[in-house]
Amino acid sequence: MSSPSTLLDPATLDTGLYIAGASVAAASGARFAVHNPADGRELAQVADADLDDAARALDAAADAARDWAARTPRARAEVLLRCFSLMKERADWFATLISLENGKAWDDARGEVAYAAEFFRWYAEEAVRVIGEVSVSPASTNRILVQYQPMGISVLVTPWNFPAAMATRKIAPALAAGCTCILKPAAETPLTALAIAALMTEAGVPAGVVNVIATTQAGPLVSTLLADPRVRKLSFTGSTAVGKLLLREAAGQVISCSMELGGNAPFIVFDDADLDAAVEGAMLAKMRNGGEACTAANRFYVQRGLYEAFSARLSEAMAALKVGTGLDAANQCGPLITPAAVAKVDRLVRGALDQGARLRIGGQPLDGEGWFYPPTVIADVPVGADILREEIFGPVAVLVPFETEAEAIALANGTEYGLAAYLFTGDLQRGLRVADALESGMVGLNRGLVSDVAAPFGGIKQSGLGREGGHHGLMEYLEPKYVALSW
Ligand code: NAD
Image 1 (cartoon, protein in one colour):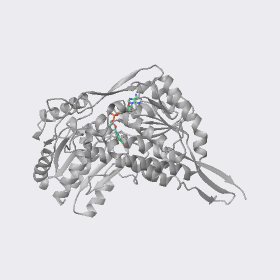
Image 2: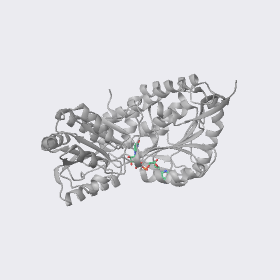
Image 3: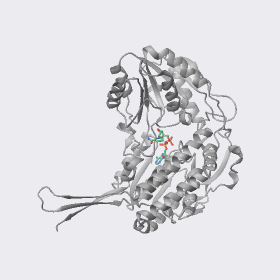
Image 4: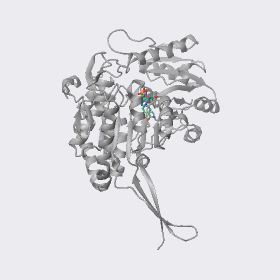
């Protein structure tokens, strides 16, 4: 393979808004800068949508809605399958683009493209498996016929940490269900979403079915869309704070909401765990995407008997990671997304150290160009430290010892979040018992990775509403229609 840095010339990127099947300038002509977090330099100037552009995108989605919903499920499936094939063919190109605008390490970028493309394939397969029901009413007075219909125009809002996968995890089920959509990507990483929209047109997605509007005015623009009665669905991935705000706004038109929000994943290691497997799982759960994942292990609770050994082994593995630009395939940990993200991680680490935690490795932002924070391990973090309550979103592992199973469960559940949780034990009975007791939508049992296109991804408590992936992800875009039948 050629070097990732030579696969793509940023000057050739599409930087317009994607409306009605074409790349167009913003009505105002405004543009904003996108930066490469690995060197802090400007990568591109992207069209900055305003409310007029939002209206254009909505009109385009509305114009395309009837025809797209009327296509046969097989026809929709075939288009999605072509999207899958094209994205796989261009995997290295997309990985380069993701690494350029998000900073992630090359292997993570490659992994994201593979994951993102799989949503096209999965929902191509699901599009033809929307199965209704027929039953007899309890009093036998009538038959109950239930069929599923597309919800309608969908507004999709995505974060910067998985610029491709968060987009396809929403677009693919929306299209499979027969909905048209308007995607608003994060301003830090709009280029990947714009490139996906262009690829989808090439694959045969009709004009207006997928529209992408990047903007620096996320609040007013999304509010305008949610105030329009034509919009029937909002699928949001991002922080809990913004999710709450959008739930309130969606109430105005009683819009159906799917919410994938923040996490604060516990990672529990029992004394009887396989240490090698636990360290390997910890590296995956913590360091996939440099820690910038909603599923990232945020708090490591390790039983006293294994605490020192686990802490030493994890520190060794973290210290061995090569830090640097994702465009050099040898690097395993990229930069954080912005200088503000580095400052936040720094604040959390300093706070924990001030409260008596023990620094094992790392612990200082790196000098030089780019927004790098090194892999860091801090042990003996006191319960109550901010770093145990807030999402770190960086390459920092925080260790706390525990004595009993009940204590581990109480510590793990002591958060308003409930997205992912991990536990390692050699006792399957205990594993399943603790998995039942953990307040989270997803549990990795002796496994540091939970994301899978075929599984329902999502959280409970303040981590969200609804699920993405699997068959559940398709149902988020469908409404049951019941017909009472006499025959
Ligand atoms: P964010 O909430 O700041 O932004 C997410 C998206 O919302 C972006 O597109 C942003 O432009 C937009 N946005 C911001 N303010 C808005 C407003 N007032 N109205 C409408 N849209 C607005 O989150 P982020 O910093 O981009 O992403 C990180 C967060 O996302 C973390 O909390 C992470 O846990 C969460 N996340 C969750 C999942 C999941 O599946 N549960 C997946 C990835 C990321």
